[in-house]
Amino acid sequence: MGLPEFKPEQIPITLTTDVITSRSSSVIAKNEVTKQSPIITYQLTVGSYQLSVSLLSMGNPHAVNFTSDPVANFPLIQIGPKVERHPLFPQKTNFEIARVLNRGEIEARVWERGVGETLACGSGACAIAVAARLLSYIDNQVAIIFPGGTLTIHWDRVGEVLLTGPVEEAFSGEYPI
Image 1: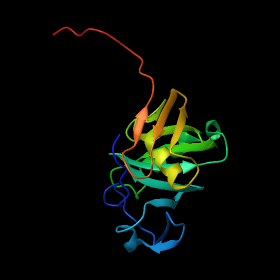
Image 2 (image 1 turned 90 degrees about the vertical axis):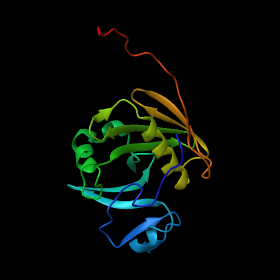
Image 3 (image 1 turned 135 degrees about the horizontal axis):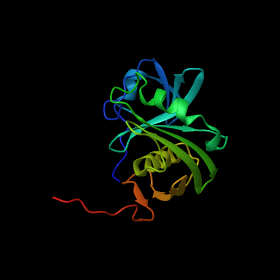
């Protein structure tokens, strides 16, 4: 799936706050972020929800929120579109809600920009794995369990993110020309 991107202009995001938490978990000024570490924890207010999101791009923007509750309990239908269209994201964003089950498994749901909730998402699975790895929740390989199936992601914090999973034919047809 390629290399993750972390610079605000590459995600892209428009920072409107003066502080965020970087990889080292220390608070740094926003003007330092563009030259430094991934944005691992950004406090995003959406309605009455205060979400702690990791921000990155896997070729498209992602905001990943980790929760300790089952992801089925999260009001994704209500919160997803608000995160997608938040002013922080000038080109909108994909939003993932994820719960670490153990160092090798994460359950997740995804809200894709312009689409809504989907059963799975390859770039979303990669974004979840990268964020979880940077937060030291997982090791190099993890199974991301979506409602639509499981994808396996491998990332060693240096190279490209690798995605593997099953391929199934969902539809076939003919179109007369």
